[in-house]
Amino acid sequence: MSNLVKFGSAGLPAVQNLAASLRKLEQAAPSVMVILKMDKTGHWVFGAEQEEVENGSRWAVNPLSFVHGYIAWGKGEALGEMMAPITDPLPEVGVPPSGADRGWEMQLGFSLKCISGEDAGMEARYSTTSVGGKRAVQQLGLAIATQVEKAPDRPVPVITLGKDSYQHKSYGRVFTPVFEVQEWVSMNGEEPAAEDVQQSDAPEAAPARRVRRTA
Image (cartoon, rainbow, N blue to C red):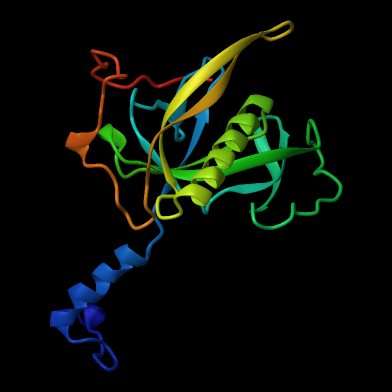
């Protein structure tokens, strides 16, 4: 047998404990967080493949995850980003990066987790610089503040992802996000059971597969 695979045992855990020790790596590894956004056609999509969010899916918003700051975009990519927790002052920014189309833009965002449907368990981050998007984030933040003052034991909003629109004289129909609060739950993982989720507002027939949206 080749001695290329011979390892010394000094300082290594017993073989019977090795599997349990290695499985801790999975627990320690951070979960993958996808980017959630509303595209120009008014559809909620996520990830690099621009998969469409399932209609009627419910999402729990982390009330401690709200952030504000600035981002600089150039030719479809972020050239710089400075964000801070909403509890901290806005970060200070200097000269925008070279190539930034509109300089530094104000950005708001938060994290959320899908708790129903085919994407249950998926964590996502929503960030926006649009007027309608920032207004929706502000309204959700104010709703959470009111809830915390009224019932601090249930500060987590369970929302569905909706949309609204208006007619712009230059850009035509512009879609804006709407975060519809369905109920409030606690921070300790207390979530509605899947069989208790009301689907009265969901469409009668959902598509067999989600649509991949293109830019």
